[in-house]
Picture 1 (cartoon, rainbow, N blue to C red):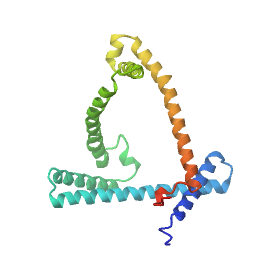
Picture 2 (tube, one colour):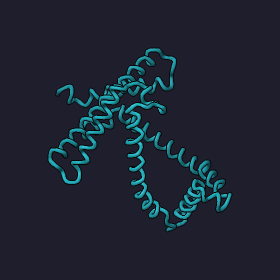
Picture 3 (cartoon, rainbow, N blue to C red):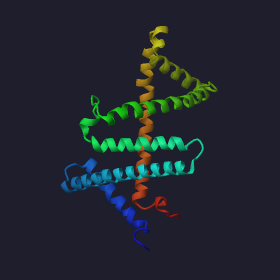
Length: 219
């Protein structure tokens, strides 16, 4: 079997990287473990950047396909997307450096970021907010006692964040703050601990070779 197709090669590499990172996190006094963990983190950054470029190339390729095929309703948006990507990349290389992207910078890439990326992100968030409102409407129905508590807590939190809440009654911000500080924080930490235990259990199964589905191996 080819080395590239052998699932045990990537599995062994993942185990080595995971052990170096895990041991370095809990035991910081071992020099070669610290050096190895730093080396693997640097390679993680390099691979992440490479994957970013792979994603960028795929976006441009699919957008170019829409333009070449004149896909109805999308080809002109694809031209706009390709033009913005090219402009951002060129301006980034031409005006690279941390000084060119600072908040007080007057560079072209900063102007593009403020007027296109930020505005587009806010618009996408606003559109997603409409769908969130429908989900909240379906969730905030007192079908049972638990749903009623969820509805009541959500109402207090909303009135805490909305300026009109304090105008209606000064107790809304106090109760909303208590809900966010006590029940919400405790529940969130409990869920986080549960997720962490699940990740550790999955990692243990992965390290001992019980989880091999990612490599196409089905027991």
